Length: 92
Length: 136
Image 1 (tube, chains in turn blue, yellow):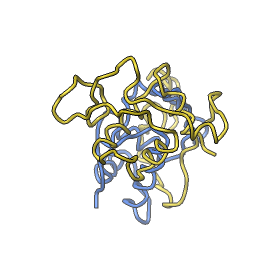
Image 2 (cartoon, rainbow over the protein chains, first blue to last red):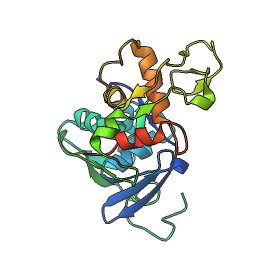
Image 3 (tube, rainbow over the protein chains, first blue to last red):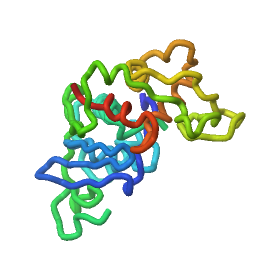
């Protein structure tokens, strides 16, 4: 159920600025800027230089947030696919 | 991170709120990432025709390990350089989890995909990779 493990670059590889509920994130290795909505920044934080599958991500985020989702695993998988396509996470 | 020292909103500075807040994960179909188009963009046609050498010419001969790092030739678990540059169209499919490019086995293809994801500004193939990331 957990699916593949992913990892994101360490925190010093990105510069993030919170903007009224959205996060503008500059990814230094690619030179690209992205606008992220929750829970994407939280997933990146959970994976920063620390690989994890969907289950691990939910556990890490759950330490800080009350998670609200009908199907948490499916929602995380969808978010991971987006983040992978954007080049912000990669398979570990 | 250096920013956020004077900000106390939930979610700032490492995204760690001081109190537990509700985080909605969203529906599977919702989108949470928008990539801003940098000035590298070219037309869709030329993007798909651009090429990424693996590895870049100045690292010719080096092998690529599963994580996409350049390693000495013959390193166990690594893959030899690809004999031809990958076309933008092939890279796009590869990064999207599609089939491996013709003549490339799937493990090597994954290593090459990781190499491409690690390309940085100034490296051969970076502009092509960055252009492929552009939303249409």
